[in-house]
Image (cartoon, rainbow, N blue to C red; front, side):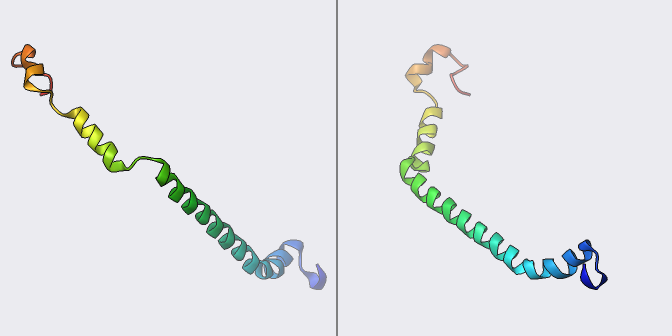
Length: 81
């Protein structure tokens, strides 16, 4: 405004260069704190859920072919082909 600058020029040439370090520091601080919350919640959630290996084993057992005695009534078609 003084020295003949318009408000837009004053913003771009004076204010933004002075505020840039503070804006960057605020962004980094917000990112670090949010990553901290994410890590804490992921560590505590692991203890409350069953391990993925047990889930995978259960799915494999469920998808196995049935015993021969069970599929005898189906003839050549079988239960799972």
